[in-house]
Length: 150
Image (cartoon, rainbow, N blue to C red):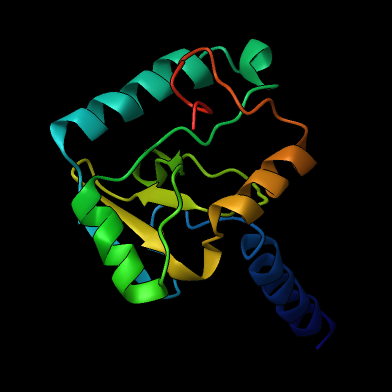
């Protein structure tokens, strides 16, 4: 009986620990919009991986919010939630990337060709700017010189 109780507690604890991050191999549990990636967007994600993530220690002070949706993708968000953030952070969940958080305005790349945007994690630009400031990140990023120019 004692072993069964311990096993149940460990099972529940594993569920709580897993809930802290984004899905690693699966899909987001809440409501999402799915978008096909353009070739340009795939290039930008690869650039982020090789420029920002590969030099994480020196890039840590800079915002990871550098990814932009296409005008058509933005229209889909505006239609469904009333606004579309300017910048997103991309988590390549199909590659096993999964930051512990905090999370807002994320695009989860669950396959080579698609992303999903969790609608319950969206913040308007003004609130997202406050969240970036609260993290202590610079609102620019040397890997993406145009970020922060608006």
